[in-house]
Length: 339
Image 1 (cartoon, rainbow, N blue to C red):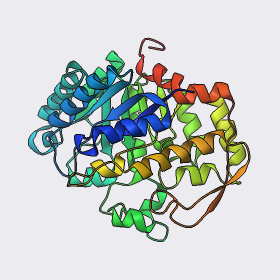
Image 2: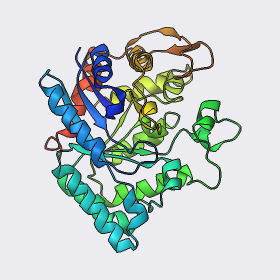
Image 3: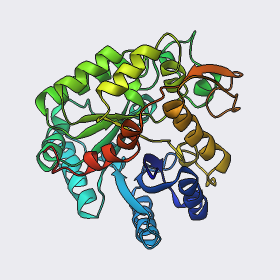
């Protein structure tokens, strides 16, 4: 079965041959390249130019690359007034699409990014023209909002998250505050075509995510793994609810791996890890396709890092897998389907 990976991070420093090798391992002939600033560098033009160039070169080999451009973070420091910020965000949105980006990638909802940059609340006037334009033009947005709940709990956050600077004390934005902000955005712009990756970090709150899906028909999510997603959904406690959720919302869930994610946030150039890329693809596909209990082997620092873990696969049907692996992405980016 051919696959579309809807969640790959790209920077030229990863190595083009390594990226192509990772796609080949997945049997992917289409991918969404999510462009974010590398490290603390706020300049996006070079990253997007490189991704667009790669897309052109890959197309000659029969691979489709859709570029999702990120917002240049310098505007948050330099805009000044709310009015100027609103104008800059709207103009940035239009420029990215005019340059050839299929959609927009937003990492602005990750708490450490909000602390690093003076990003306005998402339901403020500064964002109004941006959201209005996105809804009007039905441009797909992939927006990272929050992180696993444990990252706000000193007794539960894991060592890797701490080392990455992802333990969030009271000096960071609260996850429920951000959910509330996005909830008000969706209520005002209910036709936004937006994907909240990593199950919106609600893998233990499926009823809550279900309510969002029922209210807003253009909201999607993906199975891109964090440290908690598959461990939660693959537990015996969650198995029945997880199978029911994937069956009910089989048209709203996309496949993704986050390949390149750990490398592109580094300050220095780092080649893509082939081992990690393979581990990511194997982790997701085994969980989706396996029909019984299985042993997820300890993969070191990639996901589990805590010894072997017993999981229960979803064992999804071929029809549902085809939607998750391919058709739902086409629906998400082809805005005429349910606009």
